[in-house]
Structure formats: C-alpha cells, structure tokens
Length: 387
Image (cartoon, rainbow, N blue to C red; front, side, top):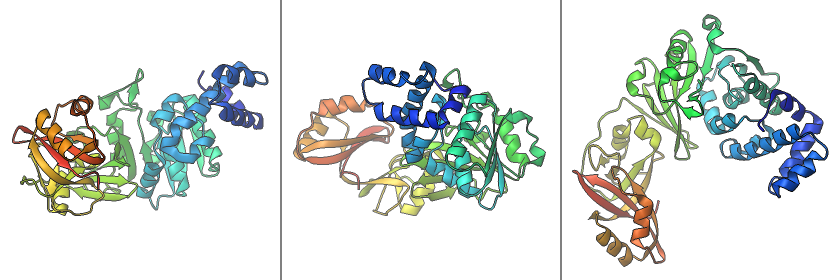
C-alpha cells in the first residue's frame, strides 16, 4: 500500500519515526516475519506505508544521496525527483532571486534546491498527497521558514504578480511518459507563456523535445549527471545567456554555441565519445572545434583527433581500425589477449550482448571496442580501455 495523506501525518509523529527506523532495520529480513513483527504494535495500513516509504527511500538514494533517508515519497515521486546535484545547479541559475514560485513542485526535489540556496519558495502542486509530501520534505530538511506549500492548480496562478518562477510539468499519463508536449500537465503552451511573461523563469521539459519548438529568445540547457542525460531546462530572456548549452555534472562545465557543423576528417590517434548532453544539444561541432578534432562520419557523433583533456567526452586511444567482421574481430582481440571488453556503438545495429558472446573473449587484458560506420561501411575501432 502506498502513502496516503493520513498515513503520512502519522509517520511524521515520534511514534511514526520510531516505526520507520524499525522498518529500515528489518527491511532486508524475511518480509512475512517483518510485517508480522511491525503489525504487533501498529495498524496494517501504517505498517504498509512505512515499509513502502523505506523501500522508496532506498530507490531515491541514487538520486538524492543520504538526505533520501529523511524524506517521504510517492512511487512516481521517487522515480522522477530531481537529482540533488541538478537541483543545486538550477538554483544557482536563479542567483540573486529572493523568492520563487515552484509550480508543479512534485515531492519537492527542486524546492529543496532553491531553499538550500537561501531562496524562499512558494510551492504549488495540484495533487493533495503530493503537496503534503512536499511540505513534509521541506520540514524534514529544516526549511519550514523558507518554504510554503499549497494544493492548487498551476493554471489558476496569476503570473502577472510573480517575480520568479519554475515549472516542472507532469509528463506521464496513465503511467507512461507522453511524447506530445501539449499533453504535459500543464501543457507546453503554458510553459511558453510562463517564459514569456515572467522575467526570471525556468521550466523543465523532456530532453528529447524538438529543437524547432524552442523559441529563439529562450535558452535551452541540456544537463547530464555522471554521463546520464537527465533533463532539458528552458530559461526566459532575462536568465538566458546563450541559445544552447550542454552542462555536465558533477564537473559543472558548460559548452555553448549555435550548433555549428563539425568537420569530417580521417581517423586520428584518439576517439571521443561525446557526453549525451552535448549530442542532444547539437553541440558536437563546438566540441570538435575545442578539441581540434573531426567527426568520423557526417552522420555520426564520434570525434577523432589529438589528445585534449575535456569534461565533455570520454576519450579512448585508438589501437586499430578494422572492417566489421566477427572473424577478424575475434582474431584481433585474441591476438591482444583481451578478456574484458567495453563495447560502444553509434550508427550500428549490432546486438552488443550477442556480439560479446560470439567473440568468446579470453585473456588478461582490457580494451574498448567502438562500432560505427564510415562512408556507409561498418567498421570497428579497437581502443585502449577508458582513459
């Protein structure tokens, strides 16, 4: 059973905190015995909510770190909550803002980032349980004095009196992600209105949003965290400093530009696999310029060139380039005694796990294999392990 407004209130009491601690200590034990032991002193509904909360805290820890152990979650909230590093980065974009309205605050990932930066937050969510969870999380993290949460529809908020705002519209319908931005709640048209009317405004949308749907005066920032593309944020004119930005965390480095084309060149000494934020922002050309590199094919994002340290790509030293052939690959890898292999691919339809089985790797050495195509011909680049 998931959390309810009633069980949330009971879990926030001293007795509820003791139950949560007991549930956390027993969570890896036999579930039947654990449930029976906890029900000896608590109602079945409260025990179910406590066990669900502990499991969701474990799940959210990968995004939030240790503070997840003090928070409450809905199942969707645990899956979608903004990572701590990303929320902190976003709050820094609003540096100088004293108060912000967090429209569609969810369980509070972003409002906690704003509050941690000293920004007062008026948080809003249309779902009563979600709003209650957000308020509980603000309190649990010590932000009662900075955060207020109310349950209402974002569409009812008068944007004319809002000095700064952030909106993270719901992008799920019936348990599935929606690909139509007008199916967001509130819809993408509302997001664009927010960015046009509020001087200091930001919004989070799906990273795969069509570039053509982004207004020219809006900054689009694709953000990755530890190599995973996590979001696309849009910022209004007064917050925009460029048109496109790719930011990689935890380094905090940003690459900006207008999407210049990348030159095509021959295979060099090093292969660069650009960060997904760079690729999605269409900034591979800008990265190529910074590295003195070129793409291996005009339709493939792999870069090649001299060794230049960069936070925007993984670098591999190229040892050999062979036409794609199972027989040739198996022979080349056995000659090098490769037993551990990282397989990358761009522009290749090869089943990576099937290929790994077919190669029958053995040996003490490690390598990386990049599958791609050059001038429509499939090739394999044998590289050193990740630098």
